[in-house]
Amino acid sequence: MGESYPGRVRSPRAADSETRATGLATAGNHFYCTAAMPNIRLLSTDFDGTLIGFDSDGRCSPDFAVAISEYHEAGGLWAVNTGRSVEHAVQGLRRFQPPIMPDFLLTCEREVYRRLSDGQWEAHGHWNETCRQRHEELYSLAEELYAVIADRAGKRGGIEMIWEEGRLVGFVTRTEEVMEAFLKEVDLLSADFVDFSYQRNTVYLRFCHRDYHKGSALGELCRLEGLDAGWVLAAGDHYNDIPMLDGRHARHAACPANAIEAVKHRVRLSGGYIAERNYADGVADALAFFERKEAEGFRSTASVGIVM
Image: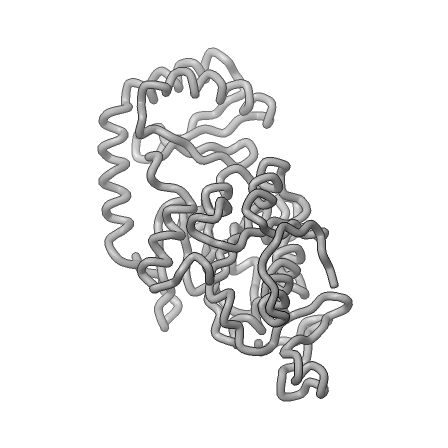
């Protein structure tokens, strides 16, 4: 890791006989796996609301630093699956200061990037190009719909439209109550546009093609890396994370305690793990939970806030 974090577990070489025998170490009352991890080969985490709080200092928690470092040292891969752009995601990660950088960035809730040896990011495969073409087609077909949405938003008030390169790409509302009310209108307006969809996180919303979301981006990453869904753990907290928590692209699902109820419900249906702790600490607990289950050799079942 190159830096000491409070509560960091000892390496396997320095561990006592019990830790060497079980492949598990502890930080406080939380288990972290230090042995080879054949089950969770890819960890896909949201960023805002899952690793950091919106009103936090944006720094990595000590327990997550322990968990992600040990996981990565054992060969695990990490993808940050976020609504942020590449530039905004990198900016957030610099402030987050994790002990290791992610291997992959899944950005704007649909694009796939991999980290090069020099630390730069490049498009992984042809997915991003195809994704952009599909969204160009959608904009051409739904341009009139976007204009109507902008007009209705202006009349309603409390809604700021988001424009990129002269195109309407989404909006932000003053409150979540305003978002809920306006979405009912958007759903009615867009009912005949079968390819139109959107991704929402709190008061932010981005328009998108229905085939492109965090789940499909994760699925493409798994295809490129040759990873089965059974080897993947996904963790998120809000509506735009649900497509990667439904079991199709990640067999293991988790959320921190601060997740909205709709996400917790989805995680329960997926037989996943709902942490007792918030944000990155909850993700650390989830990673430990699934790896401990693999070490003990029992199957995944729905669990709520289990801390051994």
